[in-house]
Image 1 (cartoon, rainbow, N blue to C red):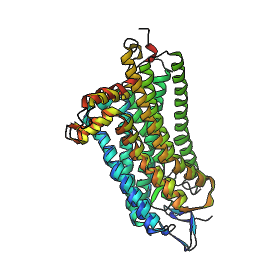
Image 2: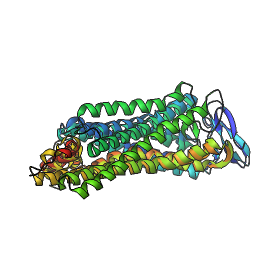
Image 3: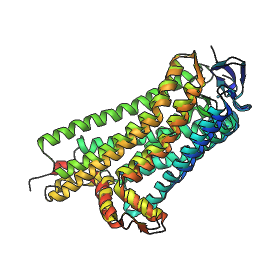
Image 4: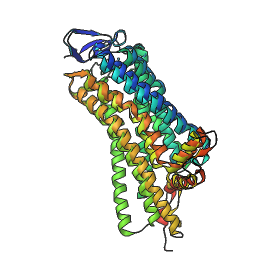
Length: 590
């Protein structure tokens, strides 16, 4: 095996010096140049700066505006909460560790970070890389520059700084806008707020830690900080994933009607949110309590589950199999099944003309949004999962630190996708956000229209399509709202996939090729990129939900919307959020 095992750590990379030091005690500059750690630290800082405010704003806006308190929005709020967990308890630890070049928080911090990010054979660390010097130092105590050049650590730090700078404000703004504008408090928006919360968690408690660690070239927060960062990152990512599952199921039930007429209410949204957190905890918590563990990965400045070793003391093999099967494959299968059935149903309805044009259009828009969210999630996490699985299945295979770092950091970008998709596709939310930021004024002057469209998106599951035949014009509006909501969700999924797919792919590869030689950078980049997922949901939600956007603008601008379109956005967004409650099965001849 090319790696070096220590006390709670394992460095699977090779380096010229041949020295491997604990990532909890020494900067890991033998794994990568200091500038790479600084880059990671900057990247985490960016994720924190953006993820924290945008996820928090999502919660504030949703709670402040009653019109946003729709059942579907509960799931979005759940995503925002998950984002907050990742930012607060994962990104912060990673940021500080990257700043120091090693995991300064020690094994306990590593377990905490790993637990919050997902929610160390050595002493809480394992360096699976080989190096020419033959030296392996603890990633909690020494810079890991023997794994990668310093500039690589600085690059990771800069990337995390970018994620923090974008993820913090956009997720925070999503919460603020939702809480401030009543029209955004729709059931569907609750799910979007949930995504924003998850993004904030990732930025505040994960990205910040990774940013600082990358800056220092090792995980300066020690094992405890590593556990915290890993836990928050895992927790936030899982909350986002299961929130997308809830959205997919909601789309399937509303459009395909396997249960007949169905209305997605606040109660359903609340149950869905609770479900996402329970499932996330069943994935992130086990390593904290001894089933596997959280250890520094890649360039040793961010933490994740231990899929590098087969130590029977931690039962890593069984946990990795459980995590990949239950918390990755199962939700992905559910999502693909739901949308596969949905696509078939939409085609049948279009061919038979059983529903009004408005209802069909609205359904398509909502579905498109959800699909985009799913795609984003897969893009972000699949690479990381794949690499992790490869490493697990190829114990002892030689691979570089970069191989695991790239997908791990790329997966962090998932904190950005959902809010961005939702903001882009939900006109109501978008206008509410503009109004909040502009102290109650909307310079675009289209609030009434956006409010109607966005509300139709978040309330799409509560509209009875039996009433569509009575008013063809209203039916057309509903159909358009459905399409907008669908488009928003699709973008959120795409963002999540973009952030986590690289990390998942690299992790899968490492898992399948135990002992394979790879660079620290290979694992670090996707690991840090995955942290950006805390930014996507609130950004998407703000851009695509006009009602929420206006509510956010009003909240930020102290009750005024410089765009002057609050009424319009409220009407449009409401039609979007209510479209899922339309029962197309009740459409009757005019």
